[in-house]
Length: 346
Ligand SMILES: Cc1ncc(COP(=O)(O)O)c(C=O)c1O
Image (cartoon, rainbow, N blue to C red; front, side, top):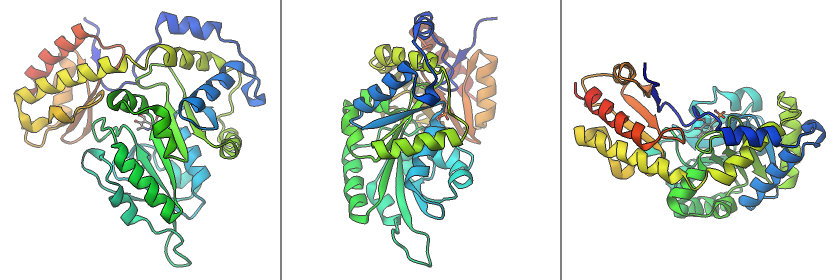
């Protein structure tokens, strides 16, 4: 049987031989003692890239988000986030369970940020009767929104409004690399507008594990204590930081290839039925299909694709998602298009 084409997520990539060699050669030490030179240089490197003072390496993007939330929002206070954001929908209630906070959400079409929607919801310093808002989270790119790149102008408006209200801003930048490559906005420009940032090295960049939470020195020093408290103090983890360094050296600029292939998939899908998606909205590596007008469900569509050798995700009854990545090439893209065209004809 032919190897399946796997477009369920950009997390399915496997480390290349060169990445494995970089891992094998990485100098290591006990990172709980701060002795791992590869982790230390990675944290410094990524902090500098985003113009932040400091960073802490975490095994997952979820933990990086949760450490940031823990730092910005006290128990009993409130975080605002978009209603389809990863923090709200896919971290299994972690913010409530670990930080004892509440969330309120605003809906946004395709996850696209409109600063006013978030700011209108905010209620800082609400006194003894209502929950006080203390932070707002923004996801860039927006995963369940279809890889949406957040407009810099809206981010600026949000920062200004947040400053006026005395609120902190967190960036869930799991795929900020994709936003940077698609928009041309510099990473340290994005960095300017947020108090804390989480970035993932294990999505489009192709490292097997790893995220970094960024912020100022004091906040990151505190977050490091919470990381250990949550059980994620790691030892000779420079092996993984070595993979992350390799990913940063080699795999950022090439994200444009993932974006091009996602666009090719989107154009082919829209050629079957325009109601499934608008290819103009596919800016990065995520292709979301709205199957509301189809006679089949997303699960049935995914099953048909799987039968033909293409793995995709059914994320809702009528919502399917394909994600391009560094283990997906032009030949596979051609084959995937043929499979999709057949599977979409009811
Ligand atoms: C936008 C976003 N944030 C955070 C995460 C969490 O990353 P992890 O799976 O490493 O916990 C993901 C994972 O897909 C994501 O898409």
